[in-house]
Each structure stands twice: as C-alpha cells, then as structure tokens.
Length: 128
Image 1 (cartoon, rainbow, N blue to C red):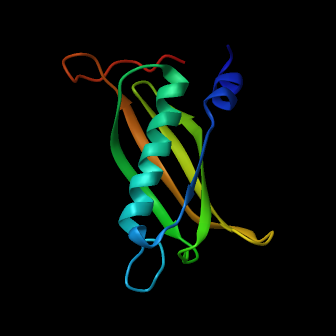
Image 2 (cartoon, rainbow, N blue to C red):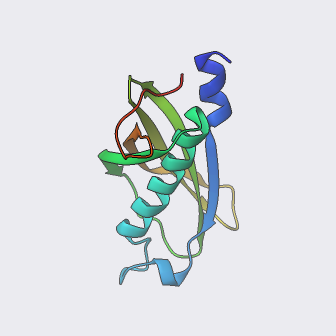
C-alpha cells in the first residue's frame, strides 16, 4: 500500500455528544476533555497508519477557534500529515455540530507527534 493510500485508510473519525459532565462553568466543552479526545483520535490514527506501538511525544499548536456548548455533537477527524523516520504527525480537527439544525463549523485544530517504540520503550523506524 502506498503512503497516500495508507494515509487515507488510517483517517479516523469519532463523534461524541457534549453532555454537561464534560463542560466547564461556562457550559462549554472543558479544554482538557477536548485535548483528551483529540489525543485519543490522534493515537488511533497513528496506530492505524503503521500498526506499531506508538506514544505521544508532543501536542503542538492547539487552536481553540470557537467554544463548544453543551448539547452539541463534535466530530474529531484525525489525519496523518507527516511521516519521519521514527515519528509521525497527526492533525486532529474538531468540528462543532448543532444537534437540531444543519450548522457545522471547525472549532479546534491541533497537531500531535507520535514515536514508534519497541518492547523496551526505545524508538524504532515507522513502517511506511
């Protein structure tokens, strides 16, 4: 499978409902919860790409563009954007979607870097 085919096959989409237990005192999605969901989507994407043990080594440039209120859906989309020797970078985009109308917009975007590791937790080459 070529790299573009692997990238497309590893794309990950996760949809979640934003309930009150995931919101802050402003009734919007708590930033820490959003980051946890994004890291999970990125991890799944990275693992699906190379089918190796992966660990998060960096989250970078997380842009919170718009608040996500309780009572909405979010869709997290993970996509491999860079493949190095022992690491790869995944972009996760979070879309806000109203439950009862057609409104949908990009709310958060961030980059996550992962390293492939062996049983001794040492970096190994990424299977491309």
